[in-house]
Image (cartoon, rainbow, N blue to C red; front, side, top):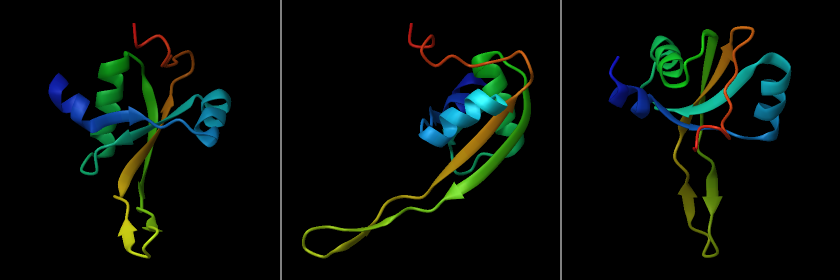
Length: 100
């Protein structure tokens, strides 16, 4: 898989309280991924971008929330796909170190 496709599959890390706890307890990280990405593509992209070994990938589609503005108009936020990536023992991803 080429590097350009890897960057279009993995869009951003998803940081929340739940994902932080999962990372500490289960060596599992959460990413926002492309809606057309498959589990094997996500696994290959994470292994290629972060130089780690992935043991398991779980994906789920997150439905966009319906919101109302001050005029009462109904808008819908876009739907997106989330991937939970579990790494092999001894591997980890340090997001603070990637910026430098």
